[in-house]
Length: 603
Ligand code: ADP
Image 1 (cartoon, rainbow, N blue to C red):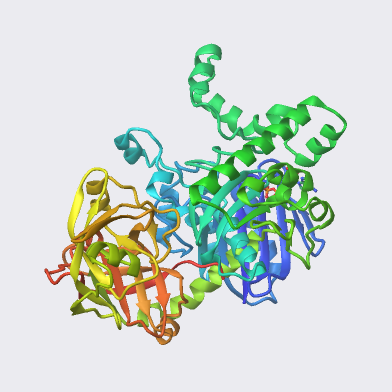
Image 2: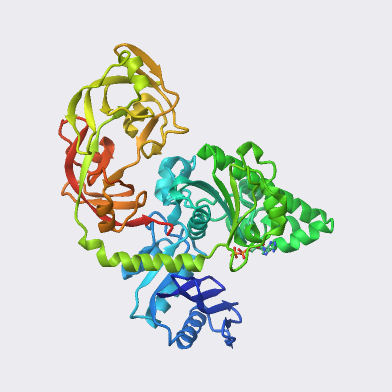
């Protein structure tokens, strides 16, 4: 299927007709200087110079010419890159008049980008009225940022009133290179902890834990984080007020300074890394300092994000600098042995990405962490998102409902822990069989002790397991005084522990306390029916009269041993006003959910 991919910027326009399966580009157009002397260059050699006309007219002329040149291509849709999706768009979406209004309403968050993106959408919709148009957002991938990572330490009411939070950018590229890295490593991206360094004119680092963005260096705007071509990245916010007092610079002046005159350009006079590398080799001090600061900041973020995830499986370098500069990769990845990453200097210098080879590994064979350079392809990523939406559109409304069950707090224990809590060789007794085959709520319970409080009579679920795991709600966490991560069952590495008290003894768990990731159990037949795979992440709408809501980030778990059922915890059940009754651990089929659409996929 052929997709027209559009990226309308303030002074530039990029458009490509892309085969969404192979990535082959049928026709490419680059428009530059749209504001003063528009020039349109097509991959077939056509060049058009326009009289100074205005941004909208230049876009119209460019897209009209593209339409003529691609008249023999059957387009399935148009994919528009939109920079800011705010809180509204957590995935790519079909563009309707309402979606246009929503993008317009987000203009305050991205004044330089969203209005021009929207102008491109409006003009393209008039020129290509008979095919669907889709918006693919740079921010959507970061919707999964946990609250602790996306929230600034500012007064809550101020942030809520003005939509101030970390949104993150470069999401389209991050999602794409993470998928390519996983394929290269022959692993499921949902089993990997990745640090993705997108180093282009704009630069950012993202921590991708088991398929979800959980930290990213760009913030409410693309200004935060790494040193970039012309952006400062992190600075002490006190400098803004200081500059104002000392120099009288206005907010607009400071904005311009930090976005346009800082970063590599501010330090060395050039925003082009090639130039800086050449000049630093010639011994120029400003260029050397720029390179040092750039690399130092990058290393700092890599270390920080490894700490956030409790380790890393692969570090990805992408974007013009990450793909092409062995020197920057060397400076970022040397002496990371403490993390388990050992660079192969020879491979790093020698291997180059090419059209045939879009991923190269430059770690030593014994390195536990893979070091990868991956060529990003945002056009193809956008085209693939469009295809997914076209496919999904056809079957979403024909899917059956999913029974929803509420899990109260409970624990799964090992033989050893049961021995210590209840006595050597003690066998759990069945109080009630649960809907998932072979699972039961035991008559036995334990006391879970945290720093602040303790929870009595926490039910044990059988049968015994190979690792101890205590599943509690966020409300329980506050009560206990423990900060537990949201985790899929069985993934207890780097989680906090707690004390368990039973009738015959106590056990101090080193880890195992989690807030369960809401999930749907299903059989392979169900999965193929819904068009999902094991460990996909989906949305599920609960429709009820009281407080129906849509749950995002619902994990799919597929096994022939499962029964179709969604599991949420008591907080989540209460939020959707699902009555759980008092039947104990798992209140089966308390409500029904409708799978809405796939939220994140790296396919
Ligand atoms: P954008 O973010 O606008 O898409 P790119 O991803 O093309 O930009 O990255 C542009 C940056 O990549 C520039 O700083 C450029 O100097 C740098 N770059 C491109 N090729 C090389 C190279 N061979 N060595 C070092 N840096 C490079």
